[in-house]
Image (cartoon, rainbow, N blue to C red):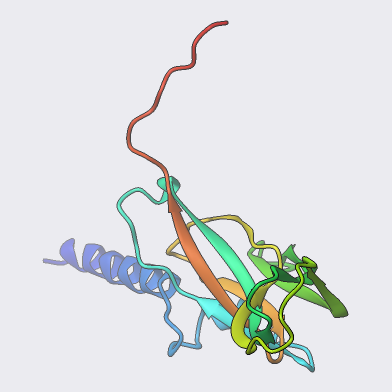
Length: 165
């Protein structure tokens, strides 16, 4: 009986330490301590991923933008970057979106001036692929007024062989 007690303690310790790796937004006791608070004029957006059977086959594309009024014909994009950074002392990665205040580009297709305007999600160039890791959140800092969307990319199960040429 006494030999089982240390094993039970070890099992409980392992369970609680692994549970802290899978922290969710309502559990501020673990992951939030590692990432800096958002600076003034910025907000921190957190993406928690569900566990997958083979996470090496999955990737995440980050899309930063905001809904704006456009003519609905021309392609419009924001100018700026999404940079990958590392939390000092922790080694975790996070992403920082920099949007140029006057930076919007557009194609120049002529549009009837009477055509009604439309609401469109206008984005920076997407960032990715980002490694899929359900054990750590994806943390993105964006300016106030912008949002983060994301999409998944999954590798096919089958591989192909290239031809010698």
